[in-house]
Image (tube, rainbow, N blue to C red):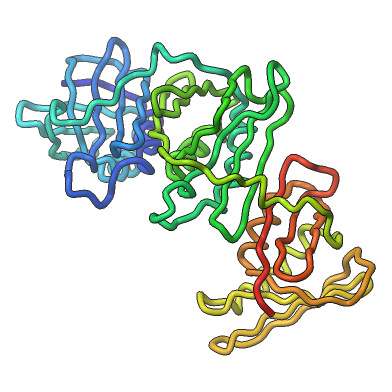
Length: 371
């Protein structure tokens, strides 16, 4: 096996696999990626058995062949080379020699026939969507995904379409039981995809898609046989769906409007981050005390200290005090793109609702803490 490839091209291809390959596994080959030559290009494959990635890059092939190599070590070697091209050679003992300028690396590999098979998705109907829109929707929801492995149905983003026909929109939902984030794409963003029943895409898979989608103008997506598939011009990623029932999130969204508080996104984010400095795993609450056009923030942690701040806001009504997890509020407000944020506060232990002013396509619901 022998080929020549651009250093930057090879680096990009290997870098895209790093979030997928298993770092801690009892199956050593899952630390590796598969590299296989094709006519005028190489194919790079990575999998952790739940997520599979296949990508292709132009190369000058001298001798066809295949090999699996440690993704992490290969990436580090390519990153530290300084030449424009890399000369890649594998011998009969599955050892690879890489040369770039005068730098030479040698790295042992494992035979390709031991690598798990990742099947292409050529026969699956795919639908075109905006990469920017898709990545932004993941950003607005993924923080609310649960890490509780017992509640498998909350370990991913619930993905569905809203509406019908050419006007159908993408919709993503995530919750961990303490907060709920919902993001809608613009009209027509589903690109023809119709989901009668939503699917749950694991958090890890959605994060990998987000990294790829951020740099793509257009993607193709599809659902088939328990798999979520995404394609770009040179890359395919397949993700096993979570086979579980997602809770009825619509029941959590308050039907009645709460007391409205409106404020500058940046000013309050900075104030909340100042409160967050005081927080710890045991003490992470921030108390809002509201009066006419004024919000006083207080965070008190016996293990660390106390923080106070005041922010001018748009509020009229009775003086009241409420408490929330400071990090949940930061995550929710960071999902707002507008300069002004609306926060509907409900009294008692009812959830608060955060939206961008004038935008109904994103909301985050946060449960209060006991004062």
